[in-house]
Length: 81
Picture 1 (cartoon, rainbow, N blue to C red):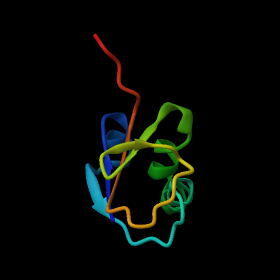
Picture 2 (cartoon, rainbow, N blue to C red):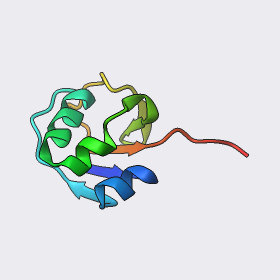
Picture 3 (cartoon, rainbow, N blue to C red):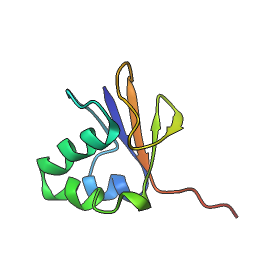
């Protein structure tokens, strides 16, 4: 699946997107896999309350299943102005 990173998440990880082979059942499982890779991923996912996730461009929850999902995007909450 494609995993996309936006704003400071991209800055911490150092990539705008990557293809990930995973057996993760939920977004939380995927985050755990990514966090275990390297310190930069662990830093980006250290505080999930500061992140939002979208599955196939639909806002979702971290406990959402990944079955059939082709794209996961991580980003900070949007602010208006």
